Amino acid sequence: MCDLIDVGSGPAVVLVPGIQGRWEWIWPAVDALERRCRVISFSLTESRGNGRRVDPGRGFDTYLDQIEEVMTRAGLADAAVCGVSFGGLVALHWAARCPERTRALVLVSTPSPTRKPAAHVEWYLRAPRLLAPVFAAQSPFRLGPEIWRAHDSIGDRLAFSGRNLARVALSPASPVGMAERVRLMSTVDFQADCRQVRAPTLVLTGEPELDRVISVDDTRSYADRIAGASHATLERTGHIGLVTRPSAFAEIVGPFVTRSAA
Image (cartoon, rainbow, N blue to C red; front, side, top):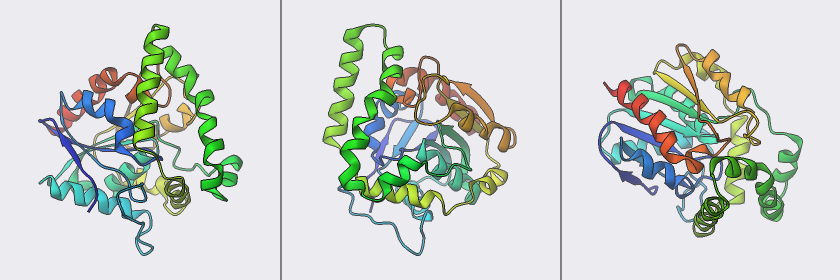
């Protein structure tokens, strides 16, 4: 049984975390969104401490089994599904496979459906435990500019960085689990999934010059690939806008989920 966070009231949205797999890393978004919606979240299979492993017979669909499980435990026949980065691919696959259970789909800074691992990622996959410190050391260069832009003072930037580092330290990601998720991405035809989505869809990105993890153009391509999808920009953010500016994130996603529920 996977861990489950279930907070707030109103229209339900299942929030799927990113490649690191831990719902705790996106807690600011959960906290802001629960003031508008009922928010259900969980840590992905292969995360430290949840005791779950990817089912070889199910592959990437193991993550769909998790969504099925948390919705059943929450007593939900259907819900909006919001995926963050890698979690967007999970949410997309769910919406394509389970249209009758998907009220709405929100894709946040999600990799392109045609994206293949870059050379440096392939290098990391060879020894994820050994190379995890190298991967972590790159984070300030990728995320630093958007943290600076999202906050107005040095004090605010330092306070955010301290809180964020505490969440990461208390809920560490599994390098092996992250590597497994990257490998599983190549086993699904996400382009075909785009053609099968029927739910109202919102594609949410940060600003192009601030997202140094996923190309904003790659994420925005979903607005062209999914029938009727719309796009919104979370200003003064890059890849982790739902954490750096959670209230602004909730102000965009909350009303969209509410309209879809109605």
